[in-house]
Image (cartoon, rainbow, N blue to C red; front, side, top):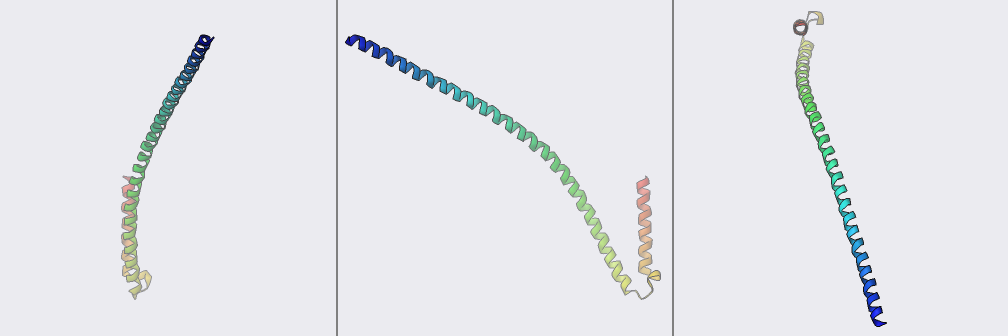
Length: 124
């Protein structure tokens, strides 16, 4: 009877050990599959983010060009404003009536010539 008990204990212990090994292997396999899926998803996310960054870089470059052009326009407008301020100061000092003031007349003449030049450039 003792031998039978030893044999049964051995069989049951081996079955238990086999079951534990099977479930450990299954768990490792599932973890490996989950890690692989997570890695694939991470790669997809990185690819999408890289594409977004590339697209945004292009937009940033275009915006930088526009900002550069606007800075030039602002500089020209600042120069025009400064000139207008000088003309206004000089015209204010002028003792002749505004319709005969040489400063204002010269300014009007220069403004007319500039507009004609701009119109000719646009037509060309």
